[in-house]
Amino acid sequence: MSHRREKAFITFKPGEIIFQEGRSGNKLFILQDGEVEITKQVDDEEVPLANLKTGAVFGEMALIDSGLRSATARAVTDVTCLSLSKTMFRHKLTTEVPQWMQSLYGVTVDRLRMMILKSGFSGVEDPGRQIVELLAMFLQRGETTYSGNVYIPWDEATRKIAYILSSGEKPVTVVMEILVNSKIAGYEIALGEGRRFLVPSLDTFLQFAEYCEDSFMIDRRKRKPDTDPAANQQEHEFLSIICGFLEGKAGPVTLSATTLDRQLQKKFKYSSDAGHASLQKLLDQGLMSEETRDDGTSVYQIDLDLCKQRKTFFEMQGEFKIVQAKIMAFRPAMRREGSGRA
Image (cartoon, rainbow, N blue to C red):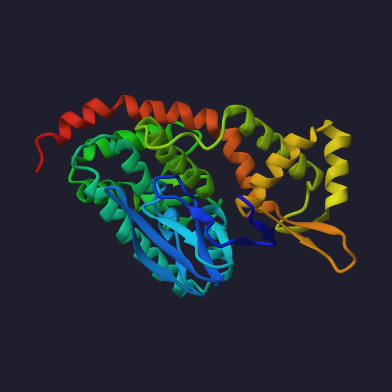
């Protein structure tokens, strides 16, 4: 693809595919300039659904459901889009948007997600994943303890999830028990409130929920893994270099391209090909942006907080895999309990 990136913007030439129906996606797009056609494949015919103009938002379902693109987006004219990954969107939502608008967005997304989960529960193919997703949704509306843990009342969460999924409370309780016996979550007894389900890091739990959904999509042969283990290792190493070099700093950090390249080669003798691939991945995810200053020098704007979150994700993948396997192992018992319910 011959698109060009400036800061958080991507440009496309007429006829270029922005995203393809049936492919995985994790970004939404805001059309800054140009025209985009949305089409859907019906039998052997590509049917036009809409023509989008400046200001339109498309691909938004990628922020709610990690499934496949339901349509194709193609540039009709020269197009400039602002691209936001799920991680970047969540970060901007919590740091740049008024609280009332966050609440409105949260309620809307919650209702849509519950409809998606409830409609997909009838086959009970993977109820553990759905329980994890609902826990993640509730935790985003949870309270925070003095020590920084995010929590929700245990019994209330159990009842709500069982009601939404039309299942018994036992499957929900078992999944929550598996989680609290891991590094991902925990529990405490609060005087006058009873048991609380809590997480030391909300971002980590949200990453685990996405990991479960991604694994489900791969297992169902609906999509291929985005990267192979070697590419993941390279990206983790790249993030470790950045976080180590900028240790002690937080938030947005400006770093010249020359300085970053020098640090990569000096400390880790990083190969240019691997470094370029990892750098491009971080740019695509919105963790970094690139710009050229008036004097012609290239600099990177690095969101160090997001880089640390992504680095933690790689470091927690072993734990994610173990916990997910335990949840999946309980699936037959869930199916038997739910089989007698309407």
